[in-house]
Each structure stands twice: as structure tokens, then as C-alpha cells.
Image (cartoon, rainbow, N blue to C red; front, side):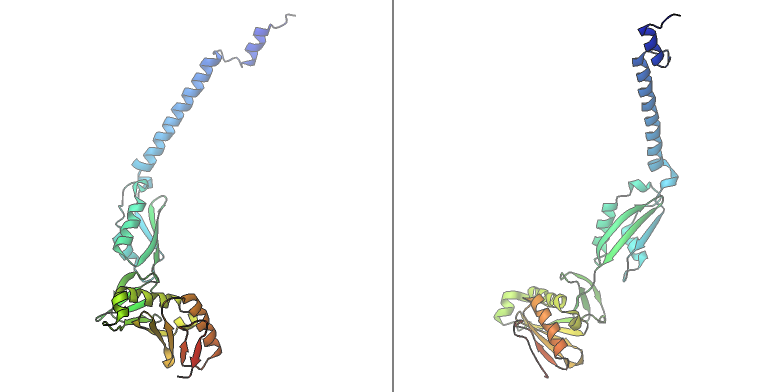
Length: 257
């Protein structure tokens, strides 16, 4: 019996393709490239040319005061075009610019046909009384809307400074308003839920009127966290008190009037 030579044995191990090793590898690579090109072209067509992945609807979530249709109109999402081509960043900027009540918005593609607008609305910390209107401001002092009537559960800010005083000349209306908003944001829950009016006479003379004829001397807007703790403790102990003074939070006081 003839014994296979080394060359013959090596040929058997190549699988008998009949092609030189280099040519075989070249065929495999070219085939893979062709397949990738076809798949890539198909994917591009699906994303940009196919009717299967078109933007045809806009979903809105998270609204409380705003109506979903109002948000859709402001967003101006381009419909009937490729979903992948919708510029989500542009839509987000457009919404925040046109609807100041929106503090944040996420614009997402919801395959295969929708754009979803996830809205977070601003929460009013106080109302600023104007000439026949009330302006809604958030905890950062950002004014985002106006209304004709007060809003239940939200205190009203009234600025009543002595315009000839040194305090007014130093701080001005804008800083006094900012101080009042800080007070509204710092009030403890037990006081905020009963707060009706935040009266500002000067930077160091801010008073909060509560329901039931009660009042809080807050003083300046400084040390808000300490004053909140002192007021919450005082209201818990002095349940029948009508006047609370936390202008010096290390020595708070309460009285019957």
C-alpha cells in the first residue's frame, strides 16, 4: 500500500476546495463585503426611504396645566418624514422657548411611527400681585405665566416698600421680589399650606400671613433653612399662638397676638 506523501496529506486537510488558500480567503472576504453592503443599503432604505419608519404621530405625557394639543402645536414636529431625521434637540429648545411653563422636556423617538414629548411643568412657589393680574413664579424666581385670579394653596407676594428708604435704594424691587420668593420656597410645609400673603416692606422686614389671622415675622430671606426648622417646631409646640417670630432663628418666639 502506498503511503501518502506530506504534500498529499496537507492537500486533504485543506478540505479539497480546489482553490489556493489565498484565493479562498479572498472569496470569503468579498462575499462578506457584498453582504454587508446589501444589508447596509437595506438598513438605510428602511430608515430614510421606507414608509414603515415614518413619523406619523406625536404623543405627549406629563402635562398638568398645559393641554397636550397646546404642546403638540408648539413643538411643530415634522410629520410624514423619516422618523430618524427628526431633530429632537431642536424640538426641545422650541418647546421651552414657546411655553415657559415647561421646565424640562425629553423628546424621544418611539419606533416605528411616533415622537414622544415627556413634559415637566414648573410648579408655582408664589404669585406676584400685579395691576389686575397675578404672575406665577417658581422657586427660582422665574416668572412663567399670568392669571386673573389667585391660585388656591399658593401664597401671594405683595411688595410694600418705602421707596424713599435706604433699603429700597440699595436692594430695589427685583431683589426684594427675589427675597420674597426665597421665603416662599423655604417655608416649612406646615406653614406653606396655610400661607396666604408674603408682605415685603424691606429686605429685613418680611412677614407671612397665615390662615386664621396668624402671622409670621420672618425678617430677611437669610438663614431660610434655620428659620424653617424653628418655625415648624414653634408651631408644633405653640398650637394656639397667633404670632410667630423667627427673624432670629436661634431665639424664636410665639405669642397670642
